[in-house]
Each structure stands twice: as structure tokens, then as C-alpha cells.
Image 1 (cartoon, rainbow, N blue to C red):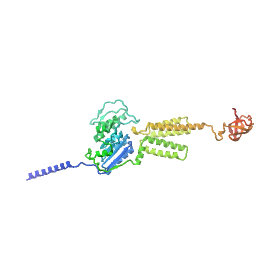
Image 2: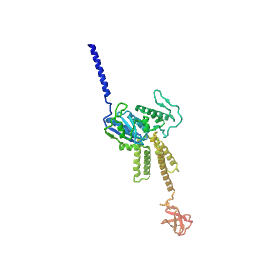
Image 3: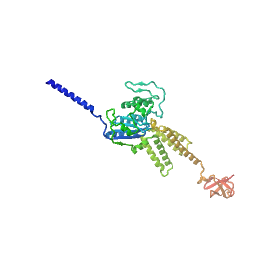
Image 4: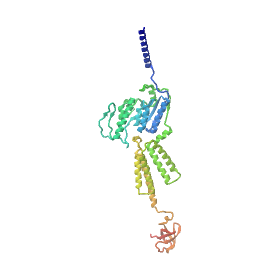
Length: 459
């Protein structure tokens, strides 16, 4: 009896296990959140402002239980520090993040490559391009092409350690960034070798090639087409996307974010800074209705807002302001071009070192530097030239203006008398003591004790 009961108990346990396994097999996969689809649009460089925009809205989507986040991306690249924070937010997001590089002709260059690869689902529009994530030197050039040793493989790691050409700093940056790219691709199941080569050799790919190389997951001509294609798409963690019938909410950049994003352009900040200094200098040198003060004040305030966003070299900023000071001082105390030359050199040095931005997309352009420094130089040279001409010009008004004036004797000078000069009668003395007859022409040589000293004009 006891033995039969044991068999009965064992059979019951087996049946329970079979039932659980059967129910698990027919259970529906876990779906994503029940909230709306959050749509973000970014057509700008990657900087602290666009970083706050993306990271902030990813966190907002997590807090609101969004179904997913769709980022419409078109970027030439940007700051590595900002890119790192965006990638970290995307990889750790509890809400699925989809990146669509579009529309046709859009870029996911440099920093955009890392952001695209970090998405749960990466997509591109036909005609879009991804890649060229190679680090750039501080001077905006690519590392040199000196032959390097053969590639080596790190133990317990599949990443290829190819010593980057150039100095030690360049090698460190390149190797670290290449490994970072591989790890991102590994987490998302993408082509690790291509990710590394995008850093080391700046390879690029169009939409078709990117799909073939498993860099992206889907090609879609529009966000609408993309959302249709991902409906029912199973993610690597087992969650299934549901987009059909789900509300969509767009979150464009606010006017404040757009303004700050414009001010994150080094070229604009540089121009605003120089306009501000020039306008205030003009206002202090020739006070007027305050136009220079208004223009200069607004320009400087906007420039300072941009300087808070961008990594600024204090020495470069100091050189820029010192150069303007030298040019201004040369107006008051002409030094035959010494201060002007020093000011121009200081302006150039300050301009080239103003921003500590290694990424070429965020650097101050050579054209901007040449245009601004050239314009400032021409303005101050013009002012100095006019100032010297005025200093050398003989006065034509006041008592000093009488020197060299031509007149006619009214009453004979023997040697005292009167002369008629510039429509007025003056008492005059003959400078050499010789008499001068009436109606003879004279030249004023000097003004002394209210009298003119004159001499006979010799033609």
C-alpha cells in the first residue's frame, strides 16, 4: 500500500512539471512598456546640449514607461565626452532605443557611428552613410602614416591591437576608442571588426553595405516605414516590440536648447566675442547714442554663454583679449606698428588655441580665423593711418591755423601796421624789421602777444 502511494506521489510531481513546461512553451513573449513611442530628432553635432537633450528624454521615457524611443539622427560627429554619456544611457536604458539615420543623404559620422551601434535596433535610410570614426589630432589632422608593427591579439580578447601611427598619445586614444567600438558592437551583436576599422582606418558604409555587414538591422525610407517593420520584432533579451496602434509623441528641441546648440558652434562664439570687444571699444573711444554698448553687450553675453558650453583654453582667451588691448593702445600712442604687430600675433595665437576641441567637426575653422583677424587688422590699421594723417596735417582753424596763411598789407608795415588775413584785420609786425608797403602780399610766420609776425611773400 505504501509503495503504491509513493508511485502515486511521484506521478503527481511529474505531471506538475510537465504542465509547467507546457504552459511556458505556449506563454506569450514579454512585451515592452505600454506608454507611447517617444520620437526625438537630432540634426546637429554632438555636444553637451544635444547630449542633455538625448539623455534627458531617454530618462523621461523610462520614467513614463514608454514603448520605445526612436531617434532620427543626422550628425557629422562631435565631442567624445558627450558621445560617451549618450552611449552609456542607451546601453543601460530599460526602454528599447531605435536609431534611424535619415533621411536620404543623412550622416552618422564619427560620434554618430557609436550612437547608432548602441541602439537596440539600428536603421538607415537609403542614401545615408555611417562610419569615419577615426580620432582626430588637436590640430585637426589625422595621425601620420608611419609604418607600424604587425597587429597583435590581446590574450582572452578578440580585439586586434594595431599600434596606431603617430605619437604615444595618438596611439592611446586610437587603441582605446577602437576597443570601445568593439565592445559596443559586441553588446548589440554587430560586426566588431568593422566597428574597429571605422575607428582605425575611417571606413564608411552606405545603407545596403551596412546591412550586409551586420552593422545595422533594417533599411527604412522613413520613420513610419521603420515602425511598421519593427512591429513584432524580438529583441535579444526576449522582449517583443509592439508599434501598431501605439501613440507617437514627438519631442523636438526646445527654443532654449536650440539657442544653446547654435552657441555650441566655436566659429559663432569666436565671431560674437570679437564683435563684442570691438563694439565696446568703439563705444568707449567715441561715446555716442549707445549703439556700440548695446551691440557689444549682447554679443559678449551670447559669447559667454557659448564659452560655458565649449571647452575653453584660458590662455587662448587671454591672448585674444591681450591682442585687442595692444591694438587699442597703438591708437593712443602710435609706436610705428610695434604694438599693432604684437596685437596681430597675439590674436592669431589666441585664435588657434582658444578651444580645446580635438574633434575636427567642432574646431574653429581656419577661414573664420583669417577673416576675423584680417578684418580687425584692417580696421585698426585704417584708424592708425587716419590718426597719423590728422597729426601731420596743418591746422586750418583757430590761432594755429593762421601759420602759413597768405594775406595783404592794409597799412604799411614800418615795421608795425595792419594786415588783412582770411577776412579779418590784424595788427602785425614785420618779422625781419624791414618795411612792407600797403597792398603787398605777406605770409604769416608766427603769432606773438596777439600780433602776427609776417614777412613779404616772394613768388
